[in-house]
Length: 273
Image 1 (cartoon, rainbow, N blue to C red):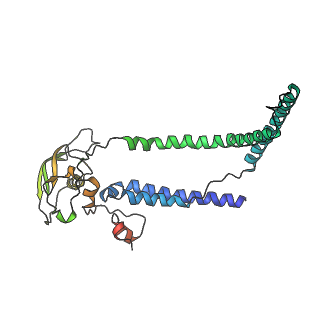
Image 2: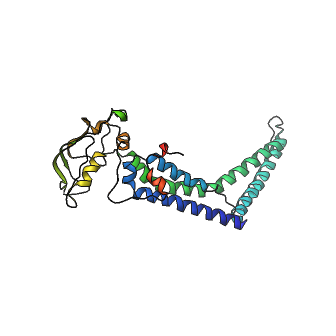
Image 3: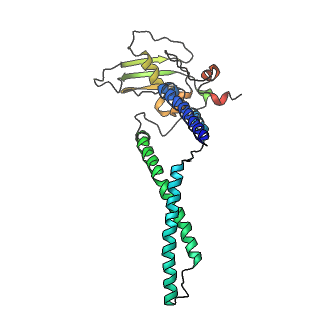
């Protein structure tokens, strides 16, 4: 039995380690995941990792001994109390509402269940307390109001109708975590015609990557607008907009999976074979 318990613990730890590695990978590469609008697939991959955890079982002899001690102690008190009630009913001649042996059995069963529940309550209460503390950050994140504007229109035009003309109009941008709000882009006006190849050239920090991030709406400009085929990109469905864009970062990002799966990342539903 001891070997079985240890094996179960080892399996649980290995599964948690694997799932933790996936979570760390997702957080480290969160920008790439957002770029490919691939959150659902990665969440499914994380959930699948936990499927290997066996059901948790408590087989400690000490715990069993305490439970049995409590049960038999409760049985003893119940029997003593029931004996007194039965004798009292007989002495006063209350034969219609007499306390019977069947009632005693019911009480014994209830006492047993109550004691088992009381013994199992503290460990579960501790787990619930730890879970509440751990989940506080999640609920804070879930309930926050995103700064990225989401249009009620949520435009999703047919892909065949999209030409790909991109236009920047009077863009001003500074990174949100920059306390000085030093502009990275200031008054940028740029038109990229559909089907054209362009190159943005400049020193490090001049805003090349920032310009691409604005197209994907990983950031919002302080002033100005970005248009796709004459429509403000804020009017498009956010995930749909990102799904239209193929993006290769200047620093390669590889996930812990096969080369094939890295290549089709974000398009898994189209390559199920």
